Image (cartoon, rainbow, N blue to C red; front, side, top):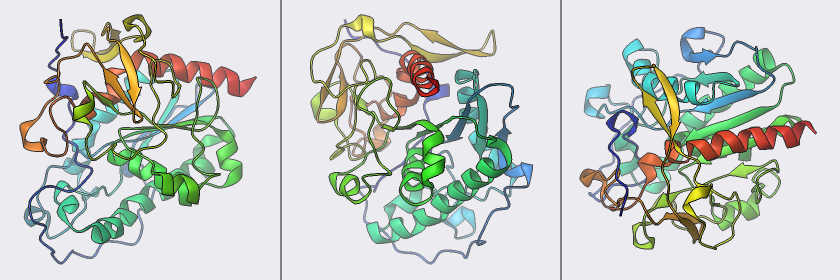
Length: 330
């Protein structure tokens, strides 16, 4: 029997690639050159430094405002409290999930949904603003908050996109040595990127090594969408390898779910057999309508679990972070 879940609270409205409609090129409003990350208003969380390792977390696309209603800007205006509030539900959930680490989470001028309707060259240009914010926030964190501790990079969807840009263009070698792993969930790395950035994009191919960790999941091979098509580094998060064997349901250690009564995030059972196909994790026992949103069907067809990836393997991710950190310290 297929397992089906409805968790509207945890389903982010994420757009990470082009819509099917004809793109309309528009003039964008000028944006400020930099965000002052010494201002705590631009941080959801700056950690409490009570733990021995950190998480630097970048949230997915959460802004639903349209270009016309956003004063002709392709970016979320994080100077506005209501815009920052849009990200807080997602960030609060992840701060609970990764509560055994110091949690650092900046706000950034992420691209709004409509930006992805534009031609690829324009999208790439727009992405530089969001990527610069994430880089600036990370550099501020390293100088003023990290104090030499090992850290994890964590992101989902557009957040992962920006972390991959950080790895490629913003992280110094000494900083990379402190990174336990970069969990860039719900995105991709192409063969061309891997060849161009062999030192920066080192995929982790087992459960202990340092490096880049990517996974995307579907219920069957026909549901692979634009976000993960062509990925060359994705692994199965129930084994943390690129082996293509079918894995028993017992290897899935549960999904992360918000518990309203306790105001906490719990790991609850979600048994499913899995196997890796073209670097996508196929979940054989989950309902294809689990997180299906008809409005995004072309990008995320029925059976594509992009909207669930950040919490579907919560139990596996939490345990794996502990394993990689132990190995790093040893």
